[in-house]
Amino acid sequence: MLNTLINQGYIVEDNKISFLQHPQQYLNSLLELIKNARQRILINCLYLENDQSGQLVMQALINAVEKNPQLQVDVFLDLHRAQRSRLGEEQKLSNSHWYYQTLSNFNRKSEHGRINIYGVPCNARELFGVYHIKGMVFDNTILYTGASINNNYCAYQTYRQDRYQLIEDQALADTFYDFIYKNFATAQEHALAGAKAAISLFSDNLSSRPGKSERLDYKNFRQNVLCGRNLKYAKTSNDGKANNLVPGHVIITPLFGIGKRNPINQTIFEVITQAQEQILIYTPYFNFTKQLTKRLIEACKRGVKLRIILSDKVANDFYTDPEDQSYTSANSLPYLYELNLRKFLKNNQNLISEGKIEVFAWRHDNNSYHAKGLAIDNKFYIWTGSNLNERSFNIDAENALLVYDPYYLLKQRAEHEMQFMLQHCTKLTSYQQIEAQRDYPRRVKQTLRRARWFFIDKLAKKLF
Image 1 (tube, rainbow, N blue to C red):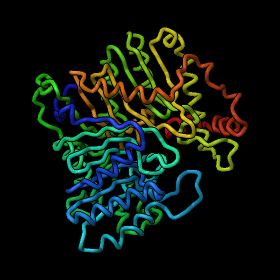
Image 2 (cartoon, one colour; image 1 turned 120 degrees about the vertical axis):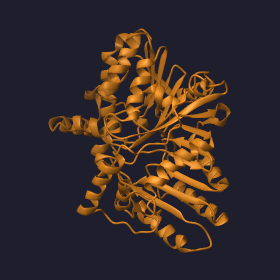
Image 3 (tube, rainbow, N blue to C red; image 1 turned 90 degrees about the vertical axis):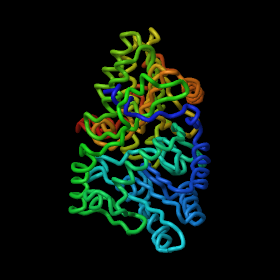
Image 4 (cartoon, rainbow, N blue to C red; image 1 turned 180 degrees about the vertical axis):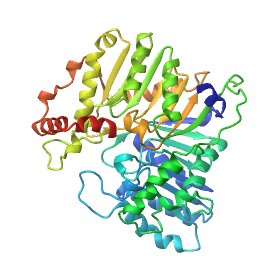
């Protein structure tokens, strides 16, 4: 399967690919790309938050459309996430209300183009699946990142570290754009029937909490559209391009996945199986699936070096000080991930001592960590928003970019990115460096104990 996917990918000049490092660079690039766009803007992210950074981006979109009436702007977000407040915050007007208040009158004016903001459901309820597709298109440039748009991701006061790739290529941008626009842009006549019933155009319609009939539409949309066999990125002809790739170029294949045996999961498994020297994984949540863990350990035992760069529990975006009044049971998730990590380190101490496994925990002041993706032998890269957990592998709608780089053209850029991440990391060489559950704060121990009594800890590992 891997060879087929590579040969169906898009040939891209390596000098058209660049990496950003800091969230401030992400915001600056995002605003610059919006300002300079002439034909189209398409944004995919989990959410666009009504805060200082979200308002800044919204105003940039408005300014761009007013300046250039021909500009087409479409934003695709998770429907359920847009209709609630952030976890731990007091109830206020939802983001979907903000989109309507800001854009409904603006879009009625004929002297400029429209800004469409869509809410895409992945299931009847957020708990059972979210629209987790990533990537933005600005004319012929793709900005691929796991980041959403809010104060943390855009480095307002504190920041959330992610990864960011810029790719300039018309054919790849067309494919990336068309996949979303033709399938999910319900303001267009060509949109799929199932999409029209389920997807909300927040910018034109004041949304309300979904009822029973709406949830049925969402469920049908998942089954008939998202899980349909025809929902996939356009591929090029399988003409053996991998064998004829000339120096100075890489091959990039976009992938869409939802459900247990989707192409993203299978590609991850296959590149790990083919690894010969080293595997690098970025992940914010240490909650790997059993299948993934098994394949990684098998690779280490045959001599492959595994390096994992993950989040310290304090740098996890779910973390809240247990002594804080805003602490809820959901804020115990970082401790659950840490217990997973402690068990992994203890079970694989021999491989760690032999240098076959290296684990680094990221932590920097009051900032958080959200980096994701894989690199294998400096030859294969998987850029994705997937958290590599049960939720990502089974229920969320995900996408990824598979990069084939046989000439190691991106090696130096990827190494530079890794070193940037490692400057705020602590190397973990033993499970004893990590707190045991008995040493956790009282409120955390209570939450974890209750979770174990009712098997909620096992459920949480599948849903978060």
